[in-house]
Length: 249
Image (cartoon, rainbow, N blue to C red; front, side, top):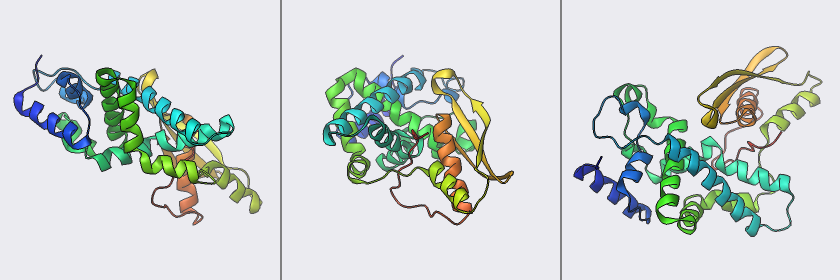
């Protein structure tokens, strides 16, 4: 089905502002369409889920490619931590917000009323779907160039930082220094299809709940739960531009 003229004009303006070209306007429309609207509106080209799956892989590869060439002679573990700090949900959503994606996402009424347009997971998914659409339409070099520009500040921080925050290790060290039992992490929810499952993890200190976090992997959810616990314990204050080491054990 063809995209309506007003929607096409809106999407063309978006790509112009972002400095990229996507010739297949139906592909771009799908990248910014949530499944919740499919049953409510006719003439929809499809939702973003398959494109998000592809874009997630392209984003991860582009970031890995960049840090590998920008910072030679690092260990695989160090490269993994750099990449994980950039491609975790919070970081991707932050970039999506800065690029102004939210107003262009098509949502169903229920999702809109529940605050979906501001939800980090949805914003991150749409940016990844956009990357997938750009990759299909313009190829690897263009997609990689867009990613390096959009994530430039985070890539610079990953290259120059002596450490990437590992909140789980920080929380364990905090407990050991105070002769407390080590924190325990429990998966309390796992939702979504296998290729885009989301996990929620709760961390306990001394048998009492101390924080909860979510993410696209158990490791990322554990990191976010540990971060919340450190904040509650007065051991960490959220910092602008912080990087979460979602890939750290």
